[in-house]
Amino acid sequence: MRPSDFPSNPAVKLLSTLFSRADRMKVNARMPSLKVDFGDATSAEVHTAEKLLVEAEKARAITIVRPKHAEHILQRIRLADAGALADFLGKRPAADKASAVLDRIAPLLEGAASWIQDEIEAGLLKWNRGDRAFRIEANNLDRIETFTKLLLAIDRGVDGVDLRTFSNEAGVDSKAFERHKGTIIQIARRAFDWEDASEEEVLQQLGFRPFFQLVHIKGPISVPSMNLDASAVHPFIGLPPGVGSMLQLRKPIKAILTVENLTSFNRHTREVDQPDVAVLYSSGFPGRPVVDALSRLAQIAPDATIHHWGDIDVGGIRIFRNIEQRIGRPVRPHLMNRDLAEQLGKPKEPKPALARIAGDNSGVADLADYLSKGQPKHLEQEIVSPQQVELPS
Image 1: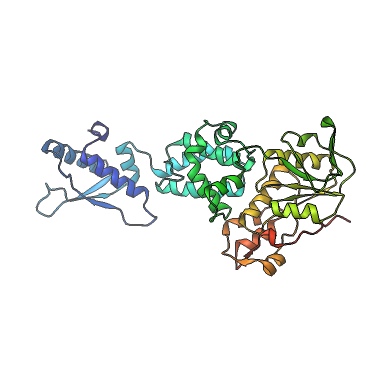
Image 2: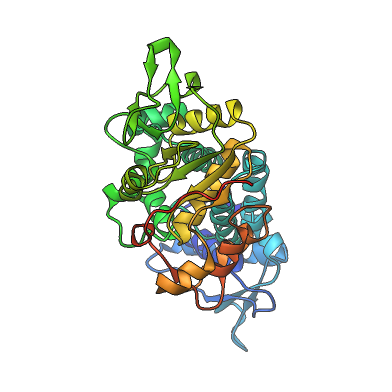
């Protein structure tokens, strides 16, 4: 007699409930137990249920508690061996499911951004306890892989495309992002400290926009294939996507600066005169056209230092690190340091998750360390007036 032969029997439901509790059981906790209650089952169902429980006891999965002098009555069942109960029911323990998840997605996570690794690790802990994570059960490996691919694609940069095009380009089905949108927005709010942002604002910060964004750039640049010389354009020029990889320099530059916020970018390009510095607007997490332009400038000006100016907060740190990882060159913080935060910022709770970046070989490691513990302050970059980029001597 096996439970699989009687899937709707009350004993199977009782044993399954006990198994679920066992999956969530903490180390050294007391073995869970349940009162035997078959509800409104028929006499035939009760007879089968009692036989199933006895079989489970023989399999050393449970022990049955019986009243003294009335051993024919099954009063309670208590877990004896979680592994034996899993075998009896034909189920996989949560820890095994979580291990299968890790085996499936581990190759995808090599070199992934710290915020993605943090989220997936938190999810694995939930799956290991038998809980759902990201609204997905641990045994739904295909859906977990799809979800992971979406997060990775976001970190690689969104190009202002619609949600379905983005899903296709991420290598998953076209409706995948829409299915997971609510969860992804929750993760973004948590990971980047955007708790007060609306759904639309979060999507825009991630790069989802109803149309392609121009690449806003200032500097001695030209695009010969377009017969375009923008070196004298003030304060900046907007280039269409796809042009970034065609950029040329009209004269050498000593530094490249990316600016996270549009207001600060506008101020910097109008108020700061540094002819030997190219300035790009990153628009939060930079889309691929911006990264293409930045990578091209780094290629044709290999001796130029690269700098980023953004908010001193969780999102600003994540954006800085995203740029570093995507261009593969050292990036220096511009107007992003502890002293400015202490002088002009507002007190905020520390974000321990940033300790991972603090331990990286990153230009923003010191600031990540500052924000990860103690009593840090956050600073919006709009509060700081633009200043010239510190050039190498």
